[in-house]
Amino acid sequence: MDGHDWTDERAIRRALEWPFESLHHAVETGQLWWSEWGRLPSTARARADALPDIVSRAPKLIPLIAHRYLPEQPHESGNPVFSIYGVDAIYYGANLNDYFEREFTGWSSKPWPAQVKHIPFWSDLVERFAQDTNAS
Image (cartoon, rainbow, N blue to C red):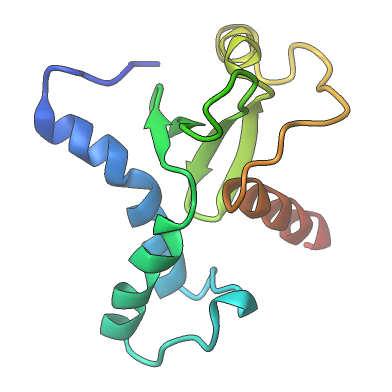
């Protein structure tokens, strides 16, 4: 799996924008809109205008490899690593060290801890995706 080219400004911008673009696509395909965000805007333009405000309240994500991200908040160790692909959101590591072990030895190479630190918005996305997947 290739990492990001940190010398390519456009590639960095794409990596930083990926979670938002991925969520925007999920909204437009009817896969994502939470009731706490209010009523679903009726036009694509209105949805595109509303989503940045919603996502801006979530901690920013630091790109690691492909669509794996580390939340930049809280500013402390132990933040989980997320794999974000639209509503297909999972924990990919309980923390950065755990992530690297799983990334290079296999996602299920060892047992998961009983609890992973909750990160507002992103952990909620993971939990809701898991509920939707288990309900299917």
